[in-house]
Image 1 (cartoon, rainbow, N blue to C red):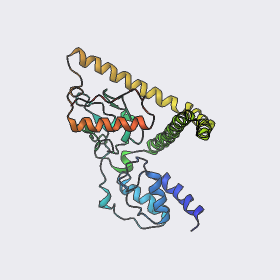
Image 2 (image 1 turned 90 degrees about the horizontal axis):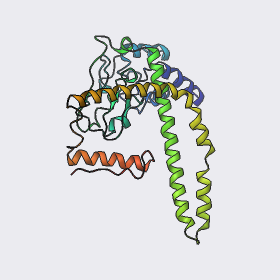
Image 3 (image 1 turned 120 degrees about the vertical axis):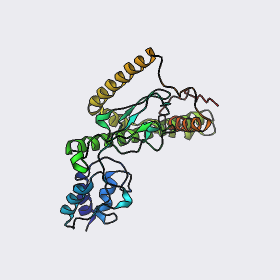
Image 4 (image 1 turned 90 degrees about the vertical axis):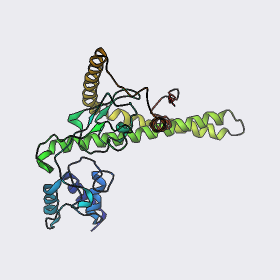
Length: 285
C-alpha cells in the first residue's frame, strides 16, 4: 500500500471515529490513531467511546471481522460530562490546558466552568486537577458508544480540536518570535554582534502568522459567543454565592504542593507567551 493509499484510508477511518480526542486508544488524538490503524500499527478495536458499534463500522470499512473491544484501552460506557465543583476549584488552569476541545473556560485564580454542550467526556481534565474537584457523571442513561453520541457532535468536536491545535501552533510561533525579538534586542545592545539584531528583526516579521490568525476569526465567533454566555452564567452564579456568603473556598488556602503545581503551570504559560511577564505566581506557603 502506498503512502497516498494509507493517507486516504486514514481519512476514511478518521471519519468513523467519535472524535472525543480522549487518548484511550493509546494515541494523542483521533487522527494519529486513524493513521496507525491505516498503516497496520494499531488494532481497530482500541476506541472505547466508539464501542462495539465503532468497531463494527471500522471492521466493515477494513473488510475485517467484528471483534471485542481491547480491554487494555478501557470499557464501553455511557457518555459522561465533566462538572467542576466551583467552591473547591482553586483556579489553577490545569484542566483548561488538558481539555482537547476548549470546553472549559476560566482564568487563573478564578472559578472554572465546563461548557457541557462542548464536553466530549474524555476524562483528560480529571488527572491534572490538584484538588480533585472534577466529577464525570453519566448523562446518557444506559446508552453507550454511538447510541450516546452523534455524527454531528463528532464533527463539531473534531472542528474544535483542530482549531485548538492551530491556535496552539500560532501561540508557539508567536512566542518563538517574541523570544527572537528579545534576543535581537540584547544583541543590538552589543555592537560586536550586529548580525544578531538583523536576524531578530527578520524573525519578528511573520506575515504568515498574522494571516493564519485572521483566518479563524469567523470560525471562532460562534465559540466566543458560547464562551461569553458561559462566563456570564458563571459570573451570576458567583454573585449568587457571594450574596449567600459562599464562594470558592480554597483560593487562599492552598497547600505548598498544590501551589507548586500552579506556579509551574503559570511559569509554562509565561514561557509560551500566554500570560503577561508581569503576572507573577502568588505563592502562599
